Length: 130
Image 1 (cartoon, rainbow, N blue to C red):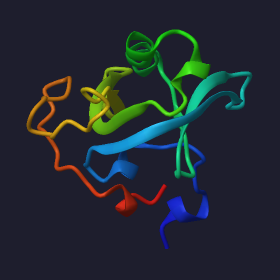
Image 2 (image 1 turned 180 degrees about the horizontal axis):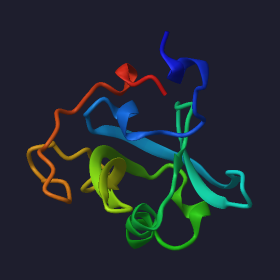
Image 3 (image 1 turned 90 degrees about the vertical axis):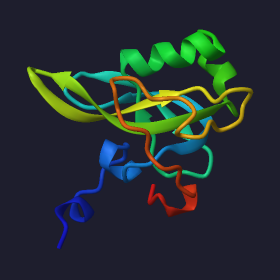
Image 4 (image 1 turned 45 degrees about the vertical axis):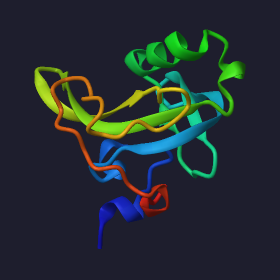
């Protein structure tokens, strides 16, 4: 038995992307109580069950592309990809995003993701279980 299936998360983790780029469209952004007196913005996607808790890096990427007002983000495209970041002195998995060029998905080999990550193969989004 996989414990992740016993205690499923409402939010995406890097492992959920299965090492692939995933193209999504924003459905909405909500402020969500994550517990422990912590509220954060979460971006939800069209035709997907789980959202992505927005950190400062990913929030700024969307703001730079689509503006500061989250109501204007609905329907806008993003590409999510797994990578790593430094957290408390250790490298840990994370999800980053990029804005597709002209609203089109960019082939993985065309633009190298940040943090010296090797490009990953695009995936049919129907294969992602979220």
